[in-house]
Image (cartoon, rainbow, N blue to C red; front, side):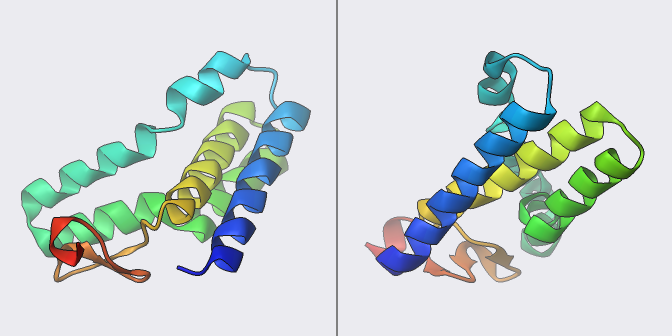
Length: 120
């Protein structure tokens, strides 16, 4: 991924930090502790590459993150706002490191290109 796109994703990650600071009353350690939780969606790959890609992509899609966030704002529900911010921050952080949404052909095939040892 180009440096410009990585910079954009980093800026969006910083936006997520600002959103957390402005809209959540949770302590900062909760943000840090929950930031990697969306990666539990990799467990979907136990059901095969197609199921894994669908489950993984659901929890790493920015539109899903924003849907949780806006639902939380609409219903004045801080846990939903927090979930949305975590999903959004995590997706942006992943993109900074080159991890994209997965194709059904396998975990290493992403919308940003191949990842892992075989792309070496």
